[in-house]
Length: 359
Image (cartoon, rainbow, N blue to C red; front, top):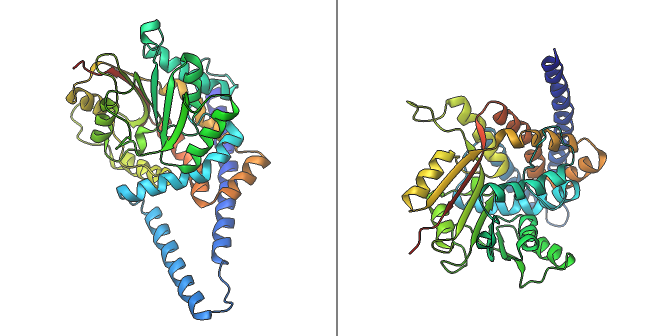
């Protein structure tokens, strides 16, 4: 009976938020359609309108068909998506742009749950157990607006560098570091590609990637870069990322329905094809990583998406979403797809840690 009531409540919440997002999408599309009115040069305006409509129709078609994006389109799209959406996220959820640690499952202090996730992942990965495992240098790969970087800099006194494709995120990360009294020598952020990091090899005691691996279109190169910049012997890699489920014995791929759901999510969040935790482990083994450990924390972060959806049910969030543009609104709608994937056991919240082989 309780489970049935819970399902009904979830359906009601889904309908309410879906209606809100639907209205926002209609308003945005209506505004775009009314954009051009001929003024001084009617011909030029007609050409621009034709080109704009053509581009918009192509995007709509690609979205409907969940067409896979090219590597360059992903890179541009990721930067733009986070340039537009990061301020809204920070206004509602604060400086940490990742899941929370929901133990106990009914906790409601969501921002503290996000901080706790960082600490619990570090603990699970054996970081900070003693002086020898406290990192002196850290790189935050896919840093968002730098919440994890600043937290670890304060926690360990680590010299921390964060990279992101989003100019807005890098700038905001540096602003927040200054506001929090952290010097640029201790913590700094820059725009850079995780598949070609601007750091020397063997530079960092801790290579930290929290919910950025899912954006990487070339997983083998991504893993190689994580290992390249780690200190040999003691350098630790921590990779926390969305993955699809491991394939069962006898399976060669996901089901068609599963692939279709992931493709829809990819269009909204600028993601390439997904891989499993097992795929990552095989790549790490192939590249000589040692002391590989893995875990599935899907059950621990499960309440997160429902909490994010509930947070959108207020005037401030709706107004911010309306101002943020179509791609952010589409991302908001895709939260329901993420929740569906988690509930079906398709999407996993995977943890992987390892050390770099000594030279």
